[in-house]
Image (tube, rainbow over all chains, first blue to last red; front, side, top):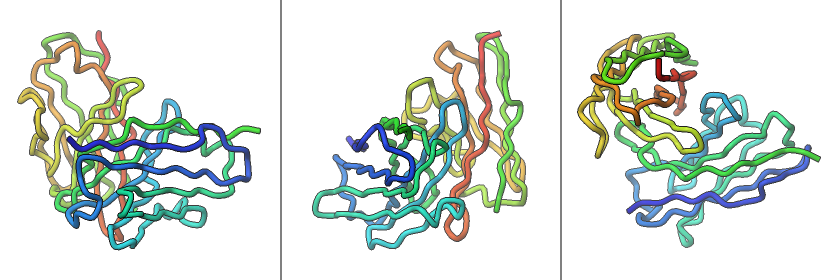
Length: 120
Length: 109
């Protein structure tokens, strides 16, 4: 079955860059039927969409984060990645990667989530 | 930018009762791109409904979705113990852009 797994540091210092990778198994990231997304959730708060990447490498970001976000894809490793620079405490959240259907725009598979704390 | 407003913020209900959750959009949206999720503490969201009214794989038929335009509803026909959770609506729109609602917590009365 399809599985997504986030990996990366759980603690990042303020002003530095948060870097996470999502490894996909059970499905090829090359499939043109899906988009690959990052979503985050501060403790006790709603979900916030960060951005998506197509297999082609085209990216679309949440305008509120656009100036600090970079996403990339490595089809040879079946992975996609997130970089968020100039982090502050407000970037502390559980970060999820998720697969999105290109037909209905829903997220059918999610990673388990990884907590990233921004603190010195 | 489309804003999704969910109501109520918290719904206290008893086992076996019917629960009705609302999701309002700030402007008319296509029902094709409206989805609902369930989230339990410490877990990732789980897709319940896509296309406003289609149940995802493995979702019990006590969950149903309806609506169009600016008003959408998730109904849980008879609450089971495992249904007490937080529910989010989500829209996928132009640009492209993804928006989530603020969530409704369903708790035991």
